[in-house]
Length: 307
Image (cartoon, rainbow, N blue to C red; front, side, top):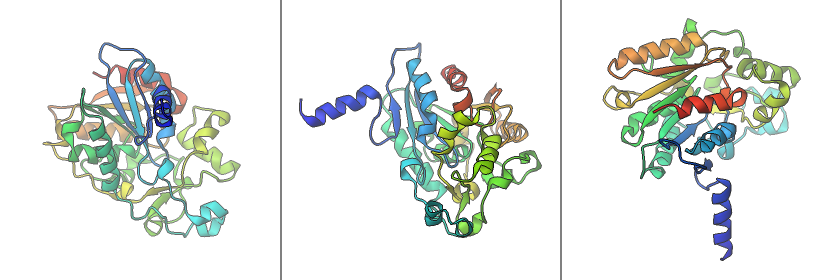
């Protein structure tokens, strides 16, 4: 066996496959093994899905998690973030300013295309990833077996996440103070995962309040500071004929301080009114915005039950 064959065997054995981020092959066959494509939310990356991916693969499913453009191993950083220049960090334009919602949706479609050949994949989006999977589903509904929104944006009537973020139902007292600078000028919605202890605690309280600091830090310190502003203001253009024909599920997070339950419920109602013949199935997790950190096994069990 040559070196290339040895490396290929090692990668398959660990479940780490090049080109699609985190992936794992089924350990045992369930009644209906599925392929899950996991799309992270703002500032996160494929790594944050690790515990959910492990739980799903232990149930016999294939799991792939991708890094969206500008996130994870695709991240690009403001110089001021690296130097710790706080004043400049508030003003420096993001290197991700030109990344568009369509760029991110196209990355999802490209991953879906690589997963064809068996049952159509289940496409899962968390938080701002809901905007991305909605746009991807409109582009390529034929590639998707089911859409799953995990405390995620479903921007139909108002078309963009920012439209829903401005509603009274979106208000919480936790996350607004975390944002840095003017998103329009920066070309990004910016946070500072390398902030001081008080800032990190505010970040935990807003997004991860049901895990303690020790459990939170590995998640926090693998965040990146910028999400392209297009993911916040870009219009998804969902139609009944394309997005609306795909079976879909919503996994609510009842203690969410980032995407308020009232807003989750509003978007569910609007989506069901948009396609009354194809309503959401809805389940609820009693968690913060980040059940992949606090209750990955329960989250995986709900996902496993989606048929």
